[in-house]
Length: 276
Image (cartoon, rainbow, N blue to C red):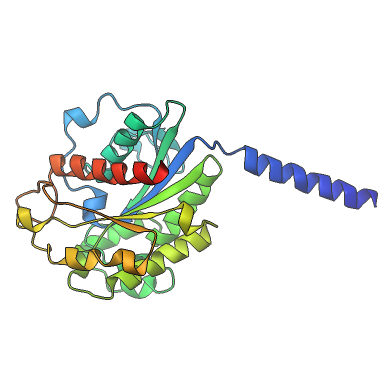
């Protein structure tokens, strides 16, 4: 009996450490997608100053050029995806949140994105068949996430869960699946897997999906927004973030810096409405 009692006490202590080790005022958000989530616009001087130290990024890899190590929290000065990526909607998502949230709240982000990829890259059961046919220019980006971006996202999220609470998931992807009417179902598969693998409940962790460059900016994939608009019919806890009026670059595929800033704020405004 004594041994059993010791085991029970030890388990209770472990549970207490696990639960109370989390800071319930540390709000964590996962972000994934392709190039517009990765960040295609050049980081400008205004984006690197006055970053609130309550805004954190969990680095996904070793980046000696910016003095960062993988699996470590840093103040969220861009880049927030990989070592040499550009400005992303996540930058101004976090900044806007902290403008509105109580001063004792910290915001942490994890951004795993691969330029040019289809949503199939984040299919945990079939990603290998996609990576096997990935173009050469994409291979290095996939390798940066140990060959499995979805798996790396989950790995980072589990590290983050020791420190805080996951409050939402941000998605910006669709250009490479343009015209694919099964895209919402594929996104649902990724979202469902994330919830299951991280022991999360959909009602507590909404999915925010941004539109691609809008028709009002002559977006070359703007027709995909009609498909993105149907996502909430497949995922009741999904919310679509409008890109209307968000300016873009010369390729009409990627937002410019101003466009990313505005889109990021829109993600935040939607999240704030859900956080209440």
